[in-house]
Image (cartoon, rainbow, N blue to C red; front, side, top):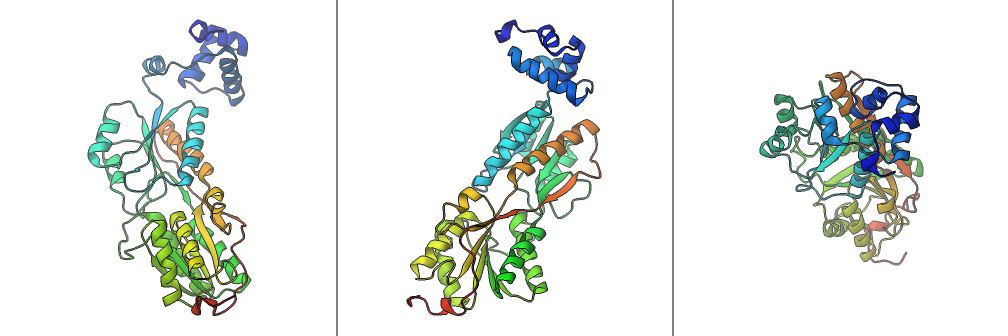
Length: 353
């Protein structure tokens, strides 16, 4: 049945419901049971019916279009971002919304242009900074939003974020169980005094320092630019300055690739001489590095689903629910890059092992 010939009456007949019920499902104008919604959705798919977004907006005075704000101008798109995009889009569709992705940096002018036309009802904001001016703009302009990530002040905000405390605690506990006591964190925090910067590496470093102390470990951390070349150079710094280190956690996939290559160039073997773990990345990225890295995999699909659901809840409730703040830990996926330590090997680069 061609789409231009399919009417709501046809869908109602297939689903065994009234035309009004079909309209409620399409326009979201009145609640229906989940079982009924699924029957109507199945009938729409069977008949080849397509929602007319413009007609729906005119009928309900709502566009049911939401935006996903991912500022690619400041940070390169990582592999985990595509998990966010696909799961967020699927969740939006399941709840009767259309998702559009905006790659804007998020200046006041860009946000004003994006939200001022009235097409987008609300935003899911990604790549969140500890002190994020986008939050101030959206609040002051009355634009509904939810965060994938979180600012330092989360009062009254809807968000879902990685539980960095639990993730780092699991990583260090696994290293401790293997016998590691000298552990280093390689991350992108090049200015530790910039407390308002990009939030994830700041949270990982704080958790690393706190948990390492609790476990009685000797820890150190240093930051580098988000490039494979910087990771390669970091391997030389590790050998020169931290020869007693037996394990390294890396919080950036580009740094990790370069770092492992740099160790190999110095004659150090992973994991025989130094164990290496990758935090907040994907299994696919970890498997592209030789040896395959143990990874604490970002829960991208779950964050995408929950971020969209949090925004839609704000839109439909008209306020932020007390339960609209949630943390999800990364999941450890074993590779071939963790082993019990062999003390002192990094202090003698170039020797046969």
